Amino acid sequence: LNVLLLWHVPLLKGRSQPVLLNTLFSKEFFQGNEVNSSEVHMLLLALLVKAITTLFALSMPTPTGVVAPALVLGALLMRCFTSLVPERCFVPFLGTDSPSELDAFEARLAI
Image (tube, rainbow, N blue to C red):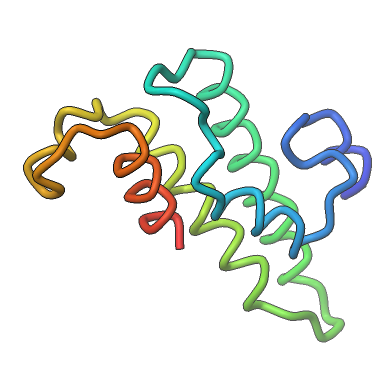
């Protein structure tokens, strides 16, 4: 069930948790300043699917890890947040509107 659900989401397709975390924590996750709606939809879909499969896995009677799935859910949630909030809202915190600084700030929020 997990493989079937995750295979249809491009961000999650066939990636292990460490590879997915590296991708989500990367400063180059969104190239450029503009985030299009398909990227936001992909993130929201990945968050929904990952939350459902994680909740299902954690409710099983077998022992499972909680740290990596929690990190992935948190990183997906913050990437969704930073893609939905306009970047001009982050400029007062940074003091600059440099694209590289904004990308680094978004990566730090995901961590």
